[in-house]
Length: 463
Image (tube, rainbow, N blue to C red; front, side):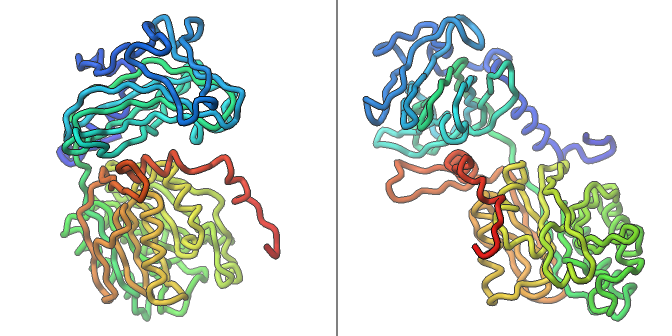
């Protein structure tokens, strides 16, 4: 909910994005846009002829593909792909003319029955071509709803410059069962508005000797962040009692009702910015290592409890959290890690799968080599196609983009890092043997074999 009294201009990119992302299969009809595809509901489908062409890499492994007039989402027909071979692979394609550099909305309805894994076996892909050959491809990986079992795959994609045509591919592979396709659409649409925000990270190890000194020093750095126009700023782990000799003990600074938390709430409200800060939080006789998210009004919007505790914290009485939440801000979805959480790439991956576009990480330090932390931060960003922002004591604080490139870094104490980022940035990548390019968010979401990952939840001592 965007409250009245806020700067609406700031939030227009988000509003536009939400409007586009919520559009249904009737997008073309509702907006008057022309569907570039012919026979989108397969009412005129005839195997071996017409605008849709079917096939597969190996003829003998193709699923049986036929029109289905009994089960369909709308109209009078759907396209059914069916196989009892777990190694099947078939595709229905249609090629249309497009304009390079333009943005298109693609959507398709499908009904999967007795299919082991949608991620693995159901693909809606657009391949782009110029007059001289392939220019890249995009997966349409966003899924919505469950209308009688039917799912809607939809997304906005930008044709690479120089492209003149697009091949829409509906694929069923590597599974028994059946897929029915209906209401396939490709329409030209307005380019997605840039979603630009300013992120900040404070690189500072408070010097003490008292909590009040740390709070005053951090307040001055938050003033810098506010005056710089930061939309969100990351503070380090456990800073209120750093160098005070009190550590994680039960003092007022180590509670959400303490002076440090009150100061951050006031600064968030004063400058209308989000703050993510590491804190120690005593609740009765239970201690957590947390990161608090303060919203633009200075309210605590959410709490993340560190789930992976090093021995030193467990021996001090800390209790781990048991959930990996994401938080919805007025500019997008964020996730939070704290220090030792970075040793497990699965945590960042889960946050990305839950929709996080930006992960912030308050951290004390990295006990490995000087470059280990930078490698870890870059990997978490690159593996998941997200921005990664860190605030650390021992090492360099970083702002990393979704391609794994370090945008800003510093090891100088008392420094505010800032970077203007676009949350819509989705860097292309290519590799040997690829016909063109993919995109981070499109490729890894579809190529990852989640059906094989159940051992990640297992632990057996000695292995």
